[in-house]
Length: 205
Image (cartoon, rainbow, N blue to C red; front, side, top):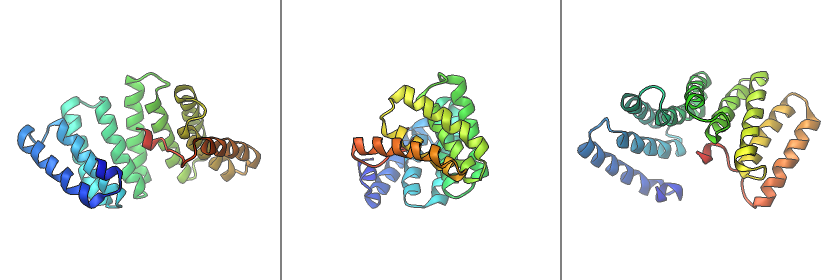
């Protein structure tokens, strides 16, 4: 994963593949550890824009997790989230929406209502709605996500800056320029304070 995090994809891929082969041979092809490695390799492919390969691995990972843990487990929710991201990157918003909604249902059943993980999924589902021009559905999700983030990780966290920007983009799209400008200024102030790029909710998983 170090090579992956450094963007050294050509070096990371054979290590993931070797790890996958060893796990399949020692634990069996349906073991949750295999699902985790499939997910890591899928993330590598997604980072390279190899979405068809990432999709295939994510689908296999989801199947393993659902068989191992059942339909309402947190690990399954993580697998569904990863597959939804692959669909979203391909512009397959309807498929992504279904998986984000299913993920949100699982999380809301097993986590506290103001858990950080719920904020992340709310943000992603809102993003799909926004891209489809469904602003009225996106806004309350963005607002709820922002409220959770501010409460759980603090108002000055980079993920809050990204959440503010998302909501500001929606307001700007609706012609609510003054509200958008207020949020953009807050977002930029956080970004300047941390001295780096914004960190998305996806990256905080």
